[in-house]
Image: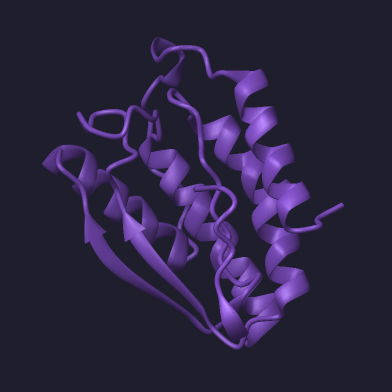
Length: 151
């Protein structure tokens, strides 16, 4: 839930962003720029731990999101850059999984490409996916920013 921010000495350390269905690459870019990066800059982590799940891939039957392999490349590239800026490059990715093996493998490959500073190799035409829910996404971003006092 968006309002769950941690408890006790960890209060404020949890960042939950409830993305609306059909969120894809542009929505993720906005969340990184407007919520994740500022939150990490405020928190000043010693290390970034990433629970790397790939069930948000558009091929996956469960999440209802529209991440492409390019989305995972962008996420990992951004997190690597933030780790370099904030915690001497200390970032750990732990593979969680996904339910579509093609989506899982493609997302993992692009994640590694980003971590190795290789360009994205995804040539999927995301225009065939559903339109991203811009207003619902804006509402989710605003809620996360308000919950965590991000300007």
